[in-house]
Length: 73
Image (cartoon, rainbow, N blue to C red; front, side):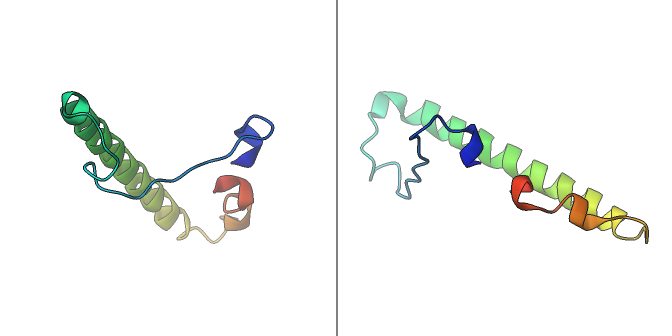
């Protein structure tokens, strides 16, 4: 979230292949390993949160508005 950035800070997203961003071949294996680890962690976190929310939605007393808000994303 923007609240976690330093004043004047910004988030930059780069969408390119490993070749396109010019990574040194020396670091390629490490970079690919890191990207794969981040991807796997993200997918597991998403799947786990989906599981929790789908289970909780079965409870009529579950207030989804309390959890799904701007700060959540």
